Image (cartoon, rainbow, N blue to C red; front, side):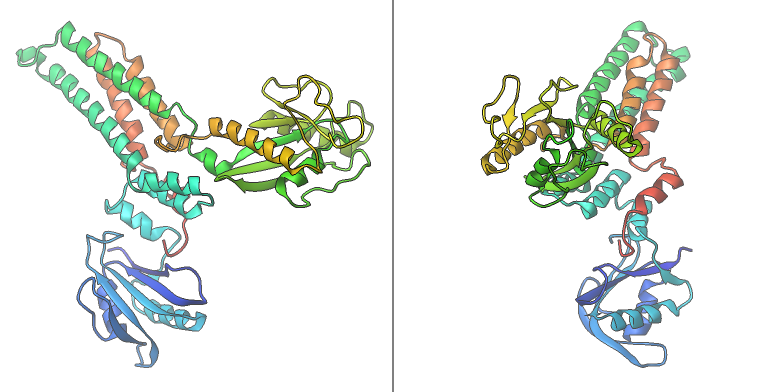
Length: 428
């Protein structure tokens, strides 16, 4: 029998109210001993909470939720107590004195919901993203997964592969008895349906993954020493993120700053000046790291007067406020000035437009990167099955079903589940 678990699910005290969740086979019996009785299911009732010796711990609301129609699929009780540290510690200590009762591990409530079929793995991953969401776009994408948009798509594809598998298996099982004809036309029809399903899946997942909303758009500022990179970083972040000096080579290593703007997370990276030749070992390391950052950049802001190393780089005319640099030379996308906030606003508009092409559309299914990879495995199986070979078609359909089932938790490994639910807090 599973242990009964408990944890604070309302955030760590102190707070006005602390909600302590208790879930498991002994939840009702244990809380009844502490609260002196249980209210009707799903109806809050004020109770005096006492320890085994009868001493008062607190007065709070008790709500009971009989399983399996609960968040965890088990009997569940919520204790709404005063949120002081001492009160919460005393109630938790009273719960822990009972045999078979222990503090929950991170994500264990949600993991039990998955085990009891209250949610699937795609919905659990969406919940993890929702808890970590920092921008409005992250929140909306996570809500879509929590509400089952991703799961519905995956289950629909699984149902279609299962239907095709059943047709193939029937042909193989009963062909000798002439109950179901194993003919070329029937195999061709199934093969065409496999192609159509594979193309539908590929179109759905061949888009930027939802992870990009959390990773942030990597914007790298690069150019020679003393080209205005650190000044521009400070203007973009609206704070002194980097040291600015007229001395060339002030920035010796990468400096990163995260900016949330327009619902999009950006990771801005200032780099060391790209000196051609240097005897300074530290400077050489900085140049190497700058080149690595440039290679990994989603958007490269090039601040040199020479053409950029990448065709997709945004070539800026920096330090346009200095004498002799007022005119915008040919080939430059924008001029930026530290005395003109409008030039920085214009740069942000260009960055937002480029970022939009790198992020998933808000109306699209929010697949995570590993979900896309699994779907591509399923797609490869569907599209690579040879025509007119029922046995190989059946095997490829089985592989496609397995790939999709893993995303719903039907065949998930314990290692993968441990990694996911380790992201959750104790009370979730």
